[in-house]
Image (cartoon, rainbow, N blue to C red; front, side, top):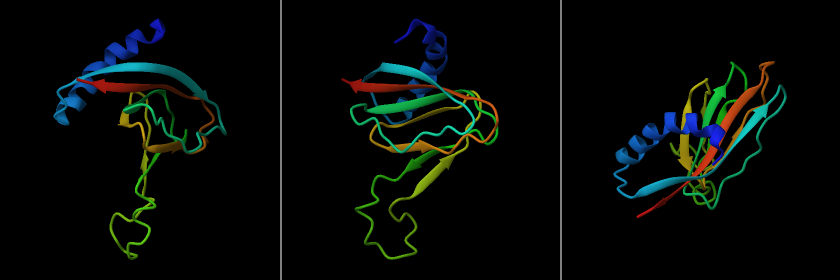
Amino acid sequence: LLPEFNGVFSLIKPTISEFFNRLDFTGKWDFVNSWTNVYPQGAYVPPHNHGAAHWSGTYYVSADVDCGDLILTDPKEYALSNEPNGTRYRGNTRITIPVTPGKLVVFPGYLKHESDRNQSGSDRIVISFNIITHD
């Protein structure tokens, strides 16, 4: 991890530890990598996942209204494709998470995620990371 991120990681580490506690996870976890991205007006993130990571997360440093919300997609889209219409959690469910400065979002590394296009006129600045867990 870059030493420039130490301040942010010391800020979010207790929250991530509490997240794992609430999941009754008693093992250890470590950040394995991190990066920062600046998304100017018009930029967006296409759908992708972080397959090898157990968990992924993002911390929003700067995020104005209409800067591009985070979208998570239900990974069961193909398994659920034969469910009848009207099923509450039908496949390909997309969850939109509004982003704000200081928001931390942690999700499974296999989960497809993307962002809406930044239409705010100012940069969305994000620090993202991956986590592995072990006994």
